[in-house]
Amino acid sequence: MAEWWTYRPSDFLMFSPRIYWRLFESINLFAWPLQPLLIAAGLGWLRLQSRGPAGTAWSRRTALVLALVLSLCWLFVAWAFLWQRFAPIQWVATGYATAFALQGAGWLVLAWQDGLRASTEVARRRIGAGLGLWALLAHPLLALADGRPWQQAEVFGLAPDPTAIGTLAVLLLVRAEAARSRAWLRLLWLVPLGWCAVSAATLATMGSWQAAVPLAAAALAAATARWGR
Amino acid sequence: MRILAPDPQRRLCLLACAGAAVTSAVPAKGQAQAPSAPLTRRVPSSGEALPVIGLGSWITFNVGQDGAARDACTQVVKAFFADGGRLIDSSPMYGSSQPTIGHALQQLGQPPALFSAEKVWISDVARGQAQIEASRLHWGVPRFDLMQVHNLLSWQLHLPRLLEMKASGRLRYVGITTSEGRRHAQIEEVMRTQPIDFVQISYNLLDREVEQRVLPLAQERGIAVLVNRPFREGALLRQLARHRLPAWAADIDCTHWAQVALKFVVTHPAVTCAIPATSQVVHLRQNMAAARGRMPDAALRERMARDVAAL
Image (spheres, rainbow over the protein chains, first blue to last red):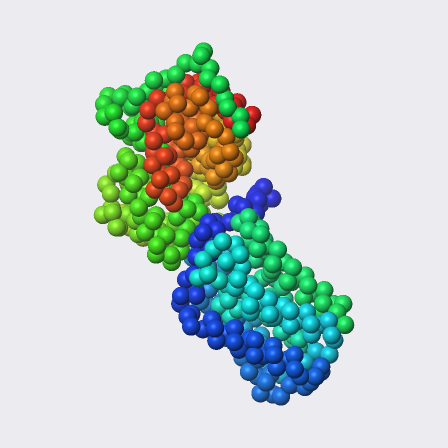
């Protein structure tokens, strides 16, 4: 593709919006009844976080469970959504699936790290909780808001956008003591932020107003991580 | 909303599909089409007649594992053949479009009228044969009728192999493609120097650059022309949908803007077949109707383009 500069974003959109949204219908049908379980588990974890004092050190088991659940979510989205469903209609999605699988593996590695604790900064805690609530409760409602059937709801742990936004929330809510864990946590920002950018570009090319959602979530999370106190 | 007034001076080609296309550079010999038969054009290199409306598969047939959408595409293909269509075009670049077409053809019992137009789209020429074979298996056909080098990718290396396949009977025709007006200078070079049967280009009521050099060159060299993006991927029709059909549309038997757009394209004397894509039977039927009824002459074609550009 030597004349790549002559291409527009729409030239790379090789599927119709109707088929794209139906992918969520398909994954929801496949994963049912995981949806209420995932949302309940996420809400439960957020509630525990909001109750505990800032800076509380997590037990090894708490950190392990959180990292394992997140890892499974990323690996499931990589395999069941991106590889199995999205890749047949968008050939670059195999690359997205690989990135999601790497993110899942990254959380597995973090599961064995010591010294994770809750964030102490008020802004990180509040915005982290807000983004978490968005990913779990508000994001699935976008389908209805867009006039699509509720069966096309994007659910955390099954669909890439709420999974990425929810993960950004966790990254705001967690701190690491050890330098190696801090470096690892920083690496774990890359894929969710990158996916939010990719998803925003895809949705914008599709002409969907939803493009603003992953973009705003990523910008808010990144700004909070950089400047939030 | 602007309403276009009829032009009393216009001259219409009253092609009631009872004979060959008078606008065709290579009219079908001895063609005795029934009143309901679609207008056809001859492939210059062989004389084979093809209906002027084909079926593209970009985006519309890329439905992945969606069974309901795949079945809807099967209905589109069924309606296409029922309406006299023949040429279906796809590419390895189009995601799951090839398996969707293959599924439809299998469901319909491999319609004998099929004219299969595929593309090779890979920079590593050594893997070109494997890609063509994979495409063939997706379609479920014994061989392709036409194999095109997609967007001229590595055409210098692909073309000799495709011509060799044609010589050995593993292909019937060889071609090249481009889209959205890219690399026309290179297209012209290939058309001048290579023994290709088909060229595929973008052409519609608003994008008319190919009228200057590519289409006349195709006529001069005896190369069949496939036209992609006759609706600018639907954008043209979305734009036109805000306006009422002009009065002259009735004079060429058009009841929808899609038919106006397609009749404009297929009545250029160099054009062999336009390949609009759709996933809906109702749109397919509207498109296929453009191969029937009265056609615009050169003067009206100019007016059509002028009026649409002014909207």
